[in-house]
Image (tube, rainbow, N blue to C red):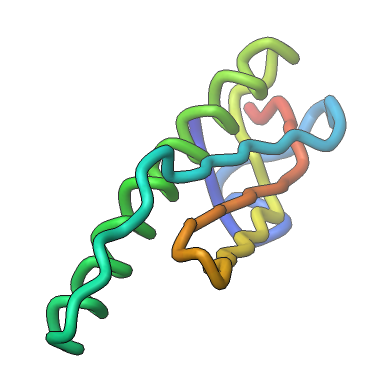
Length: 98
């Protein structure tokens, strides 16, 4: 599965557009609050990476269900709520390339 933020893939030709595909990830456990600002930001970074990976896995699964072999034009939105939950949503266009 090829994933890219660009609208085309160098060396490949888009032969069919399958439609919009997305993946969403939310951390199921709140980040621990700490009085150490360095640890707090490290916790946010770790949580974002974990949730982003979940969202990408869901994006790839959804693209495969559409019989696509690539996703182009990927956009990533990362939100941190006031209650320290991280949500990542990823959207792109599922395509077949050759």
